[in-house]
Amino acid sequence: MPAKLLDGKALASCIKEKIKEEIEAIKSKHNKALKLVSVQVGENPASEVYLKSQRKNAENLGVEYQLERLDQKISQDELIKVIDKLNNDKSVNGIILQMPLPPQINAKLISQYISPLKDVEAVHPQNMGEIVFGSAKILPCTAASCMELLNSIQDLKLYGKEAVIVGHSEIVGKPLALLLLNQFVTTTVCHIATGEKGTLPEFVKKAEILIVAVGKAGLIKGEWVKEGAIVIDVGINRVEGKIVGDVEFDKAQERASYITPVPGGVGPLTVAMLMKNLVEAFKLQV
Ligand code: NAP
Image 1 (tube, helix red, strand yellow):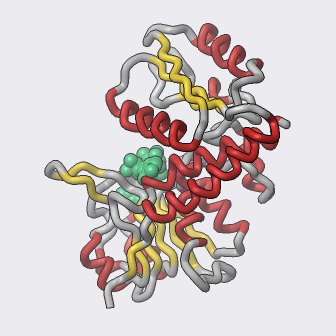
Image 2 (tube, protein in one colour; image 1 turned 90 degrees about the vertical axis):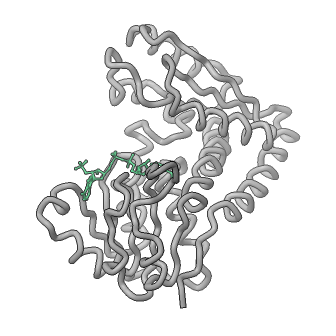
C-alpha cells in the first residue's frame, strides 16, 4: 500500500483556526491587535513570496502587519538602531529580519539584537538555547513544522523511535535534532561529511523517521527508505519548472507509511508556526 500523505495544507488551516481564536481572545482581553514587523534589507526576489504570505496570513488572522524596507547599503549600526526601535516599541509584538542580508551585515551578530521576547523566528541564541533545556516557547518555524507533522499522526509514539535527519543547518536540522531528543527519539544527524563518505544510504535505511533538509533534488533514493518509515521532506528544489523535494517521491511512497508531498507538506506549516510564535511572544511580553 502506498504511504499516506501528510497534508501540510490541511494541518496548517486547523492550526490557524486555533491561533485565530487565541488572537481574538487577546484582542478582546487586552484591547490590542497583535503586530508583526518584517524588516527587509535591499531587494531580494526570493523573499517576496515569503513576504506576501506573511502579509496574507497576518490579515486573515487579524494581525497588524508592517513591512520595513531598508536600503541595501544600510550600515550595521544603522540596522541595529532600527531593530532597537522596534524592540522598544510596545505596539510591536514580533520582529522578522529577512535573510539573506547584504555582505556588510553580520547576520549571526545582528540576530542577537532582536529582543528574544519578539524573536518570532527563534534566531536569537537565547531562544535556540532554550531548546536544549526543553523549555522553548518560541521555536524555529521549519523545525516546529516537522514536529507538528509527526504529532499529527494518530497513535504515533515517538518515545524510543529511531530518526535520521539529513542536513544540519541552524534553522532546520540542528534544532530539530534537539526537539526529537526531547521526545526521547534516538536521533542521528547526517550532513555533508556523511554524503562525502558515502555512508548516507546506510543511515537512511535504518530510519523509522526520516527527515531531509538539504536542498538537493533526488539526493535520497526511494529504495533507501525503510519499509513503513515516516518521511518528511523539507527540501525545495526547482527542476524543469517544477518544485520537488530532496527525496525520490514515487519510489519512497511505495515503501513509507507516511510521506510529505512537495509542495504541500512542510511549506504551508511554516507561516502557521510563525503566527503561533507571535502569540507565544505576546504571552511572554505580558
Ligand atoms: P542549508 O543551510 O543549505 O543546509 C543544508 C544542509 O544539508 C547542510 O547542513 C549541509 O551540510 C547538508 N548537505 C549538503 N549536501 C549534503 C549531502 N550530499 N549529504 C548530506 N547532507 C548534505 O539549507 P536549509 O536552510 O536547512 O534548507 C534545506 C532545504 O530545505 C532547502 O531546499 C530549503 O529551500 C528547504 N527549506 C524549506 C522550508 C519549507 O518551508 N518547506 C523551510 C526552510 C528550508 P553542510 O552545512 O555541512 O554543508
